[in-house]
Structures are given as C-alpha cells and as structure tokens.
Image (tube, rainbow, N blue to C red; front, side, top):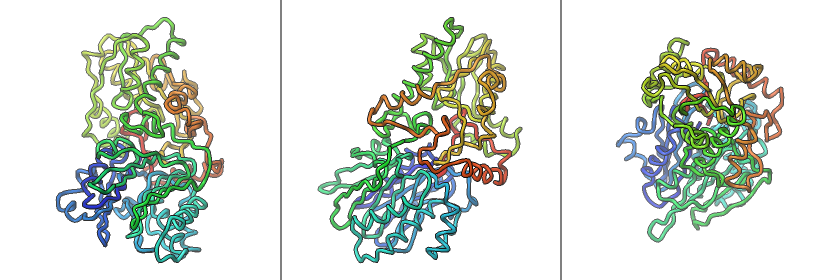
Length: 503
C-alpha cells in the first residue's frame, strides 16, 4: 500500500512533506522518497521507514517551494532503489511524479512506450510507466507555456491507455502542480489549502489525516476521472471532470487500509468500522441467540474499532488480550515457514490473565489464506482459552484484486473451495463468523449516500473497470507464481501489517 503527498507552497516545504509521509507511514513501509524544486530538482529516496530514510543532511538538501513525497509498499519489481518514487522526467520542462495504485497492463504499456513512443522505461514500476505516458502527451502538444487545456489532454491520454486504479500527483517545473484520479476513483486522493501569510499553499494527499495534522483546510476529494491543475504563474486552481463514470471507491480502505481518523470520499473510516462491528454483532445474535461468550477481543490494531462496537452491541465485556510488538518486521516476507511462525509469535503476545478459562470472541478485519488466523487461534488456546469464536468483519475474500491491493491468486484464498465450516476447522476455531457483503457496503455508504457503489472485487468478483476477465486473471496468477519466493510468501491479511498495496 502506498502513501502520497504533494505540496505546492511558497517557501521550504520539505519538512511538511516529511511530516505528511509520517502520517501515511501505515500505507507503505518498504521505502520512502521526496522530490523538491527550487529552479532544479532535489531527490532523496531509499528503502526503509520515513524516519530512517531522511536525516538532517538530506532535509537540508531538499530545498524548494514544491515537494512530492511517497511511502512505498510493493511486492513486485527488482528491489532496486531506482523503483522508489517519486520519478523524475526531463521533459517537458522537467517533471516529478508519484502515484498510488496499480496498472495491471503496465507490462504491455512498457513495451508500447518503447516501440511507439521511443522511450525507455528503466524499471518495473508502473509509476515510471505513468510518468512516460503523461510527459509524452504533454510534449506532443509542443507548448511554450502549459495551460489547463494541455493538462486535460495529457491526463485524457493516460486514461485512454491505462488499465487499473491510480491516484497521481505531478509537478511540472515552473508550470504548476497536477493531481488526478482514475476514472472510477478507486484509489483515494484529497485536495486542500492553507493560508500562508497573504498567500495560499495547496496539498494533495492520500488521506485527510495528513491535511489535519499539517494544518490544511480540506477542500474536496479529487473526484473520479477528475484532474486538478494549479497554475504556477497565476496560482489559479483549475478543475475538470475528464471522464464521467460511476464513482466506485475501494471498500478495503474502510475495512483495513486507511487510518481510523481519516475521512475518504466523505465517509469516516472510524464510523464505518463502528457500523461494520454493529452489523456483525447483529448477525452473531441471529446465528447464536444463546450467546456463550465471555469477552470480545480484537486482533490489533485495525480490528479494535469494530471490536468495540461488537462488544457494545452484544452487551459483552471488551478486553485486550493480544499485545502487539510494533518493532517486528512483516511475517510474510520472511523465508521459511518456521521463521514466519516464530515471527508471528514475537509480534503478537497473548496475556493469559485475560484469556485463561474464558470463552472468547476474537474480532479481526479479514481472512485471506488463513495462516495467521490459525496461528492466532493456536496462541490464544495455548494461553488457556476455554472456547474461541473467530469473526471477520469483512466478508469472505473470493477473488484477487488488481487495483493496487496484493490479494493473492484465487487458488491461495482459503474462502475459495471451502465452506465456512471447513474454514473454521482449518483455522482451528470453535465457530466462525463473517460479515455480510451487503452489511459491509451499507456500513460505508451510510456515511455518504452520494456514493452509490464501491469496488468490492475481492469479495464479489466484480471488477468495476469492466476490463478484467479470466484471461487477465490467469496472466496475473501466472506472474505471481513466477515471482521468486512466491510459494513461501505469507500475505495473510489477518493482522494489519500483512496487508499490501502496490503503488
């Protein structure tokens, strides 16, 4: 998963970009990058957390009144630092660009860009593909000074060629800053402003929490299929809806990815998870009217909000029985099953004082392969639980996601080919509950009735872009199984460090 910040200001902005990336660290922990401009570009990017990539000497070098930052979490590519965003292009004028999302036709586009556009994409990143498409479309217009209509044509060209989901922020040297969102608005992007003396600074960011913490006023979500251009000379903000399609934001942002204190598409992440928990509790009441549960416990961290709501609705005590060590690396990238199991045990430590001799309802955000869920159940049982009921407030995951979330191939999903009773046995729980897809959807759109549909492809197999079929899914599956170490990859979404978004 990736975090994106772009600030168009009037003086040194690197510190704000850095602070913005810290607020979005949860969206990407593999690498980070910042590019700034003050008559020339300055770039610093490397692998690691934001605090480890940028030191005082780097921040002093990142001078300028414009900055774009990115936190990366990718599972594809060569692992070379050249794939870390933002990307820099020399023409026209010089462009820096970063994005969040995934182009599932990036390999075809890379070939097309070389053969037809005569440009070399020098990495496996679809961000560099986007940069080349965008800058090629700008260069073709041969403008001495870029105006809004030039930007609209370039973004339209990207829309015509790209397949997938993406939010993009770019800065064109001495011309202005651009933010745009895919035609269906699957990946989030927000726009804000801040008074700076007598002047105004502007920001694009993946989540509203970034605007809140940096003191920017929220203006609007960048709409599906919309581009926003801030003209450098006039400082005017131009907006245009370039493609008009149904807005279908990603449901998984609300289930898991986004911070609970963020508001995306006019919907509070916190409130939506509360509603998901309440609806899950109502389902549990229907399925188990004679409740045999002593305590409700979340799997930290993302499940806490829903677990509170479940406990409240059921009238059952809420307890924290699993303590998370935030300083352990991701379990799914570690080689060998024994090493992964050991790491999961280090990451989550059960407290026997809260668990022993109790009938526990464990609440988690989702179940993908089931490996992590099974290990958690085993740990809680070993700590003395009398019974363990396991509940996912998300519905069963039955399809891969090609819009930026690294949900594995269909063959790897535990909910494919197994009934709920079989899944319950596989994860070794006493009973299993899933949230209903209708309830999960309604829990979100209740926050903003203007949102009529959402991307729920991993839950219902319906791909809103309309261009993903069995052939595309087969190619996706083949590419995953050919990746080095794929068979050993542990990418279960059962605990919140194990979710990934390609970006």
